[in-house]
Amino acid sequence: MSTINAYDPPGRLTDLDETGLKAWNVFITNSIDQAIKGPDAGQALNDSPRSQFYDLTRTDTAADATEAPVTWTAFPRRIKVHSIGDNQRWQRADASRDVQDEYCEWSVTRDPSSGKITQVMFTCEGPEYWDLLAQSSPATVLQLYRTHISPNVQQNDLFGIDGSYQRRNRWNDSTTHGAMHLIQAANTLGAEIELAAAASIVRVVNGQELTTDQELIQCGKYGEPERNSDPHIGGAVNAIARQKADIALTNPVGLYFDDLKTDGWAAPDGSDPKSYWTYRRGDATHPVRAVYEVPADRNFTVGDITINGTPIQYGAQIADFITIRLSAVACRFGQSTGQPQTACVQFPPPPAGPAAPALAAVPLSAHGYRSSPAAPSSLTTRRR
Image (cartoon, rainbow, N blue to C red; front, side):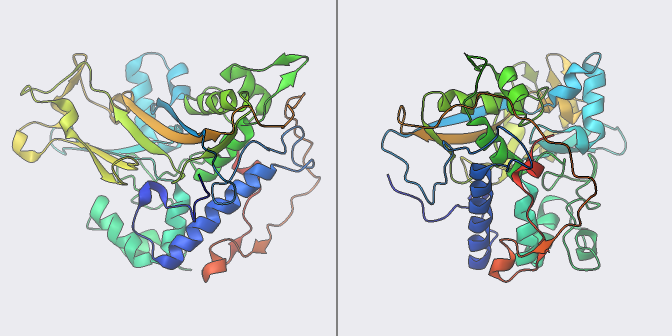
């Protein structure tokens, strides 16, 4: 197998023009290159290099390649383990997008008279894609918001007075007014790339090879140990690395809906509850947007559907049954010459005073877009 020419947009979306497509490839390759390099010693110790992680555009994928999908539950586990009972955790998860930290966020629409849920929209689209699209084609961003969120969206709802796109805007900052793309601080593609790269380091500490999800994430410090996603992603990647294989994220790099399981669900008319789950963005194998909604001619709503006998009163009840996916490719099994790290990641004390952020030409400006603050180091993209 050979290298690929360029990374495609998440879900192989078709919103970008040729300039935007080139800029997206630059963003992904730069992010991967930074993740391969890892932080320098002034940022973190025992966390670089990541010699078994590679870029599909620069390094061949060998003939023994195998794809390794990794899936996890969309409901935020940190809410689950710190709640007393289902009703409390569902209510808490529906209260704020900031707690929806499993690379899946949602917004709930209710009937104003009955209060029953009529629609739940889910997204796993990374915000970086929307930053780029907004610089490439603001009109496309507005059109997509009007298509997927509300026809009432206005240009000044989405863009600041300086013309910059606002990730958190009135149509994408709550669990009740729409969810266009991810906004929770840890839910970024940069964090996904950094996590996968950091987890590719094999660790042998005090003579013992680390193998469990929890000991790996506690030692590698590449995410939040209480999430569904971070420990599981790290454990799956590291299991491949321990086979002395090279690892890359598959093209297109992104986060995708894997499935909705509806075992135990029941609709009042006996219809299949899964038939009301539809994908709205992304190709058939890489969906990035989903909606759960009953057509108006059915004469019932989402709130009339039951899960194990309990009516759906929260979007979080649906999230319990959604799985999110990323995919890696592994090759050159048994051939890696990389040496294990023999200690856990350590962070040096921060410098005495804060440094002002430098302005630099980021991948977007290389293709004619505005300059912006310098791209963050791998340390700043860690999942927290």
